Length: 285
Image: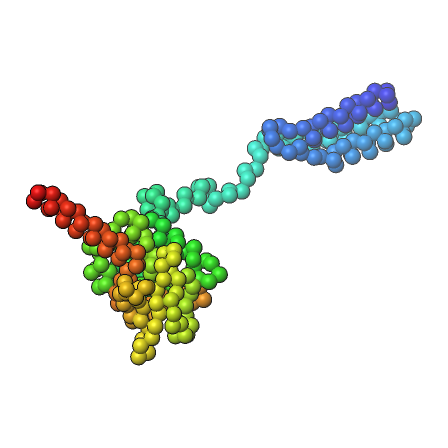
């Protein structure tokens, strides 16, 4: 009899463990009911230690305790299996996903590239027309920026809008290489501050290869002229636009013409005159 009761209680412990640790809902963490298993184990100990006492009293007590514990187990398991898993806290208010961020660009289009900083600087300084030529002529802006990043820096002699407007018809008559040369002729291979420029009385090298400019002073004003003297044209500095360590920009009142361009034009004119004379002589014969 005691063996049968012991086997019954062992089966109840096994059932309790299965009911207490099983999951009625897929994905729900196992429920734990250790107090019921402990009570049944205690009851088993009491029954085995009192094996020779009154059979009827022990059986009645065991039956009462077993029914009570079984009822509690059934209620607990029913509650655990009948309830759905708790819903996780909403990551978004009111269960709604966050609104998509507004387009950083209008109508989904990327913004236009910002205007070149050097072009803006020259335009604000009063030589927007020259800045436009620099931006529109391939290679000139890159040459200026590269020189600014060098150890010596860059000086830009920027003709004002009136001077460039007068020069535009002639500029468009130049070849591409001549246009590049004319613009680079307005860049010096060093950043000349106002103080340093006041001490310069000589020829200075330009970004146009071996072409040079002459710097001199007259009555407190800086006069720039093409070199050599036989091809000289003049421009005066009228305003300081920028005076930094690596960049100096000065507004001038005329466009400076490289000597090579003048020589090329003179040679071309002479050749044309000779051809006209030769053709005219042949016709006369």
